[in-house]
Length: 521
Image (cartoon, rainbow, N blue to C red; front, side, top):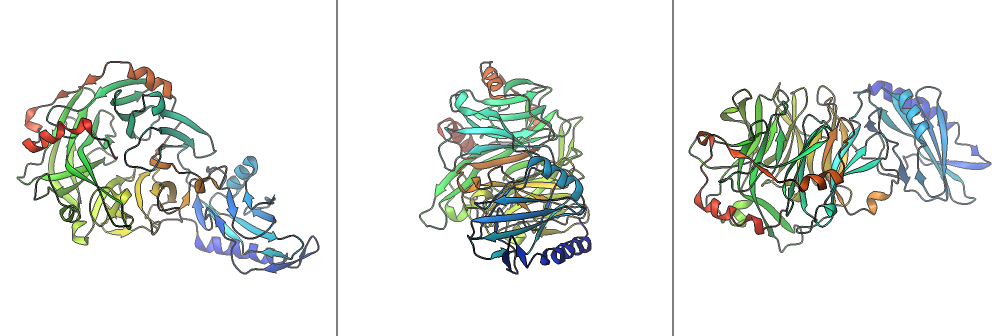
């Protein structure tokens, strides 16, 4: 992290310099407000990458004329003037500002005035610029809030260093099929997958510009291939196989509960086009979901809870009592076999339920989401991000949480940045936030993905779903998926029966009904 002593000393110098301007500017008297200006998004005191797009913002203070002074630690500075409070940094000046402030801080000073009235000066604020860069692209699904409609779903890639957005997938070109999940192998733009449900359904694998259409599902798997996790080696993918249900509340505080009726884990071997069930050898039945590999590929992490005692017709009280622990299995990629299950994090003992485990590239830290119960945290306002130290032990609630929902998250390729979904802006739509995490797990203040128009989040209804870092530009386009959809789907073959999970007959019956259901994930 940046030196706090260095940050404070630099800010103090700027405060002393700026106080010299508390006399007159353009023959106007200046009133020092003694506080920072209110800006939106809140970019005060954030830690940002040295290759991030301009951090444009709105000034939420009364005025008809605004003057913004921007300083680097060296001699570079410039002034921005605005009549409506919108602050847009010129691209070239912003790039130079980042270069000169790397490992130090940018300081921003705001003045405002209304007509001929005296000018107000606000306390300067800083943006701390880390040495560590962020991945150049972010891929995410844009989807409107709702429980049944998927008539407009897009997967796009956004340059993190500029405001360029380009399409990857558009379901309006695919008979409005639902695009459920996307996953990248080691953040690579040249190897990723998208799962599509509907008339053109299948798991679409994009590799070096070529797209193939497969179906990892095999007979006896009750819920199809749902949540994916790509093994670092590229040959295997772990999926959870989920039968998802939803119930609606009649109380104002909460409108919907999403839960798994049944869930298990499967392993898909791309090289052999075979699917195996990942079994537990004890006699108890478990719900298992959200697979995630360790960076070295030696362990498969996942979330596990006891199956409902009532079987496959749980009441709401039983659903609200279901809590998942974090578990893992040793994996041998040479044989494709797993060891016994071991519990890594006992969330149940905390009265919590764990979901979405993701491990840092160096293998030291794991970030997961904890909610009061269940396995669909995006619908839980109390859901928070927790940091687990896999080397030294211990867990803690992260500093980057808010009073609203925090859910999906993933690490940058260098392990210094985390992107996560948060509903803190309006309590309804998920937005991507970034946070710096140093080698000891300390976190900088988080910030929302900057936009060319800083006011856009207030007008935008779509959620940014499943944000994933990508190490380069994705070259395939929506029309490539249209072309691949015309190919005959290639079904996977069943792996050795010895590895199969025994599926209860009732689950098989319910599996036959899934084609008539609308997905909610």
